[in-house]
Length: 248
Image (tube, rainbow, N blue to C red; front, side):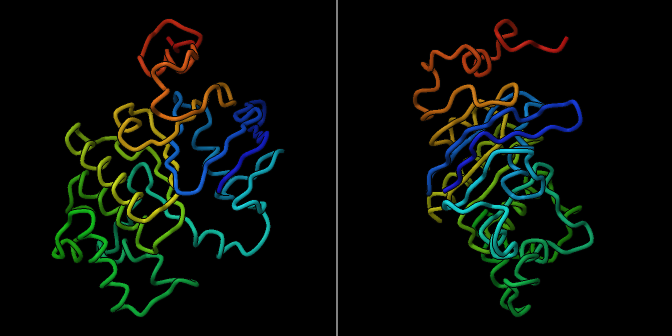
């Protein structure tokens, strides 16, 4: 469904992506791992068209992502942001239904609210949460609201940016289970960025190791522990010694 071919992106003298090649099959869950600053978020932003690559191609269903109707393109995506990115001034239900109240996906207000409450229920939140404000919720509840918003418009493709950051191990496990269940239920194509190896094992069909601007290894999650790749091996076991230099 998504294919990156020799994608390169630099910011001044900082060459972040140095020729990324990656294929994400329809209906699968791809997790991209790698250290901070290796270009994971830049790759995601390039796919969404928030950043334009300097060279290379990115296609969705074989079509260049830089061409065609921009609104129709973005309508195919859902996104769970790292920090939640909820609007403080809007009640929860309006956060969840944000997309359903605007643009080409706009629904009547009552219908949008009903959909929002149903999506909140799907992520384990009761209807009374709908009229609260984000500041009244715990971090775990805010993350669930973000997940409800990501699926509110029934997207074909969902991106998850560090979905368990800042959560305790139990809530991280809950979020991982929800992500896996929802992706399978919806038949969606998923792309996740994370450092959390527990998340990787819980939600990935395939993984890709991004380091120094290129994909060092990609394959099924079941082959991860015996990949034979020194970069992947060092990263998943958290070793200080290896080809990846630790910043001291």
